[in-house]
Length: 109
Image 1: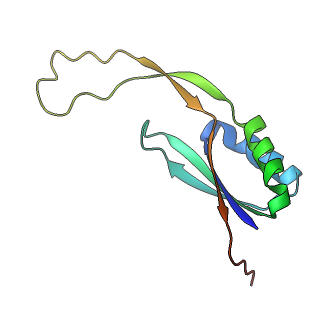
Image 2 (image 1 turned 180 degrees about the horizontal axis):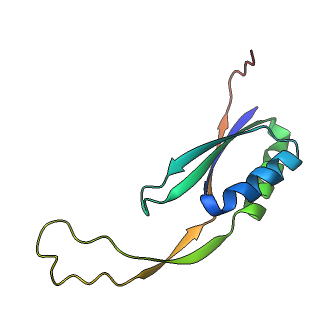
């Protein structure tokens, strides 16, 4: 058995949740916040048999696309911020960060 942990952008979360449940994966959805852009993410925890891990990864890959987004940079800490003009910067967001972990024991009460 494996535990698949997928961190995805909020925009992709509904599509991913629907696709996973359509394929009979049991999913726990958690609201999380990213550290880099300080924006909302969704973390999915999926417990599945070893032979279904590749199917889960395919569903995640198909449901979570990366995209370009304009982000206003944070003003510098300390110093004189009067001359600082925050021009938007284009960054790639979305996609998914996925961890696959072995599960030693599984109990359902």
